Image 1: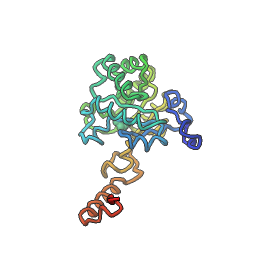
Image 2: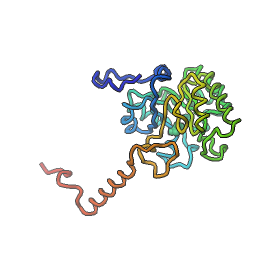
Image 3: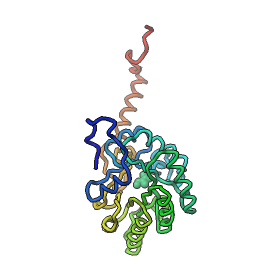
Image 4: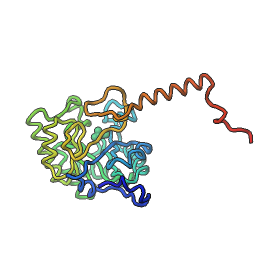
Length: 279
Ligand code: KIV
């Protein structure tokens, strides 16, 4: 289920992937998911990624916040709108930030409805424990596609005591499988599993009929996600265990900026080709 080969058929043949398309990929084609927070990343990943995730990791990556707790609904809506506007094929999924959905299903619906209406996104993602099952059902019953995020849920960092992988404790592992099944029964169209010990992530992936997306989870998941800036080498030298770096753009950027600064200081830039002649 891929439109990658359709370029020769022309622009008009590209259509946005839907929940049905993503679910049909389970057991057939791995689902590619990458984060996008801005128009340039959305444009770049759109031909290759099935899901463009406007993750609340933008709090760390774009705004330099120490955690995702300070991310607001307005931030998510502004970035979500940019990503939807700059993409044509990817299913655009937007994270519901901390404290915008936990109070009640009604609060979650009001805020998720704003995200959907004001961005044009295709669905929302909620970090979920067992308490969020009724909320997921409430949103799905009212027409909002929900991906449920389990395992390491960064919005609960203070409760969890850090960003360590989850599922080592057998009771927690069992709870995770039961929660995933309950979220699926509530109507989540997909489950994202973050930083969870491999056998537990595998068990969840194998237990579910809906697609699972892994990050630090298992190759048995139906798809994988990475933060784009992490895999491009733009977020510093220390990265999480689950990141594979496909480029070192941070180094390239530093070298380019240094070369520009040297040129300006040595009056090598601008050159005659960069200034406007009188006629
Ligand atoms: O916020 C985010 O980017 C995420 C991914 C790390 C899964 O939730």
